[in-house]
Length: 332
Image (cartoon, rainbow, N blue to C red; front, side, top):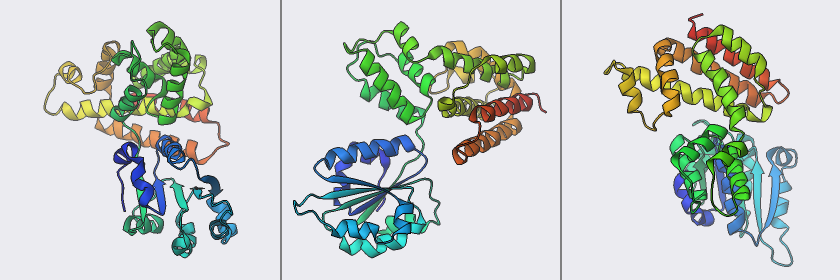
């Protein structure tokens, strides 16, 4: 049975009827939020965390945990991490052994051919929820909901939070935690929030990004030497570049029917910051369909390398991406 993530977020209790439940997809922040909500509704249960590899090595591990019911009638929930098709046989064997236990599995992206995904989609007793990446609208809703009742929360401050954390839900939640801890009187001051969110560091990267997308090789090279790239902010950097390329792609498509770039930009949703408009107008003249496609390909390959190799120098990958984008802007 398939569940929509936005419905499940607002009605997490609806998964109580399912014996097993699979969350899959690239949105680690959303999966983390679901875990927290599940723990709340099953707070009287014993929580057991297991990685799939442990179960593959010992195929009886999960079954033994299920059959080993507490004398004190303590119920159990299982969180199984890094699930893939390899675990399907184990799940099929324990399906009729589950009584009061609940099993929640978490996977990365599963394609349509995945046996695990198909099993959960067709099951009447188990559920599945795809966790796709957040967009700007869902992130704004998260911020508005979690900071509801805070005086001084404006559209500009919401945009500052997104500027700081990108569309990464985990980072957004971390920034919200900072805000709620700092502004305990629920009165947000913009001057203080800029300092709290390290906007200066992010502004430095945005300058580097803009010079690269403008094709300014000299200034890009200078800023590459001056800008400190933090490893923990890699996905913010990628999201920042990706968001800009998405806007340039949208503008490029709309130019077919309207040659007035300023008019197009003025009517974009969500609106562009006034201070960014001159830069985006300039970049829209540089970036066409061909080099936008090249840019998206380079962004995707960089993200793939960052996610698949934990030991690689991620700051160097971002710098190489910046250089490649600068070259693409110059048609090199």
